[in-house]
Image (cartoon, rainbow, N blue to C red; front, top):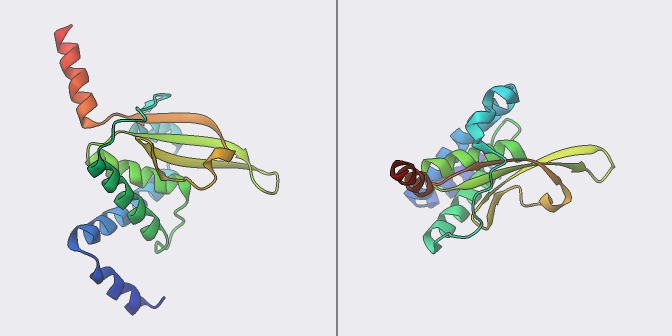
Length: 164
């Protein structure tokens, strides 16, 4: 697709979606920088280790937002000039969900690829919806889970701590 056609297509989207595409592009850049850093120094930004967020509890509006974020991440990952594979996409989507106060869980998996070599995969789930990395995630054994609560859950936990 030519650059002019891509520009026309981008302009055809409504303003909120255009902003989401730009946000996705910027967070994909952050995800790529994240991947270059030593994991032990940045793992605390992923959320609580071995904590899974609830699978239920998404409203219809949140489901629509999750689909839009997923679409923005996948669309913009195809036009980045850097590598934007599963971990980069998952980190970018996690940051976008964090900005909107939605809970999510990042899964890190390990397994074998089609040629029998070791492979790793990352995917992000919010509610029951897999935002990124859905393709082939069931072939990987989960070796790490990082959960981030929603703003609602953090507020409820703070109130509960105050009562005690």
